[in-house]
Amino acid sequence: MGIRGKRRRSGDSPSGGADDDHPAPQDWVALNDALLLLIFDRLHSLRDVFVFSAVCRTWRAISLPTFSTLLPFRPPLLLRPVGTPLPSGVPRCRLRRPHRCDLLTPTDPSASYRSIVSRRALSHPFLGYSYGYLIFGGSRPFLANPFTGDEFFPPLLTSDELASFSCAALTAPLSSPDSNLLLCSSHFVLRWRAGDVHWSKHTLELQGTPIRQIITFNGQAFAFLTDDRLFVINFSPYFSMRQLVVPWADGGLQFWIFAPPQLVECDGQLLMVHFSAVKEQMLLSTIRVYRLDGSKMVWTRVDTLGDWALFVDIRGKSTASCSNPSRWGGNANCIYCTGPSCDTWVVLPLDGVVSTMDCQSPLFHNQFYSADIPSPVWMYPNSKV
Image 1: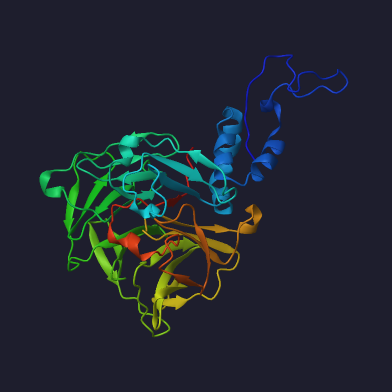
Image 2 (image 1 turned 135 degrees about the horizontal axis):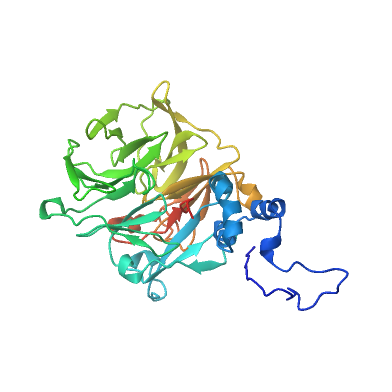
């Protein structure tokens, strides 16, 4: 459902003519707040939510107070990189540098909308997405808003700060005084606080194991390593990383072959989506979900997600969750999974089995051979529209 707002001159009729006994509204802005909220509540797509907010100041004022409460009831958008068409039979994962990005919504998979992130930005390594910004690497890392096109440039890196970074994330919205931009390599983390003129460099004692994912949960930042170790990051009184020893409650250590586990916040819980090789069939993978039990500090098996759906990019650039997906025509108790070889996404059930040899599968093994291959990423826009 799309909404367009256009101011009309006094006396104009929206339908081109209305009789005097049944006058039509002269302006959409004249709708009362109760009607506007009813309309706003029925918007299924985040794109429509943003269009609604952009109609006029009145509609914007109506939407802002309830925007953040509506996000969990709308699915995230998928930012899909698009490049030069490839010859027939060549997997899409061979594409390395996209020239534009499209936005897709699970509420209408056949429709796509152009993101206005610049082609210049897309020529840089993509490290992550958080709090409304794509994070790009290079000699001068920068952030780009895929919905407005705005770009934000932290300070340049010095020669001893340059590295091959595995991931990046904001720990809070950029406007927050608690916001930190983190760039992670195998041997150190670079930290930049909004307003600082320099980066701070923090050497890591991780035996050269890269950080795969940074996620903020319950006001704390967590680092998830490629060997499945979990660390909590502290910024005060100084930067430090403390390992959390979290065993498997079921006693059986799981392992992954091609698709690494991903952390997802869902309904106030920290979950891990785990892709495990099927015994005796290494070309098949099963999907399981674990929950961090904070009282016992163990990973506990999750049998059902209830009326929730998870959204995972197997590269770990961004993850999300959504409640009551039937509201917009989606499926509950499943995982919307995407990867470099996917044009859109695949809906995977818990404990489902997926082939790693299907070139259209998000778990297609060949796509993991190069970190430069662009990947679709799920995103919730910043609520401060």
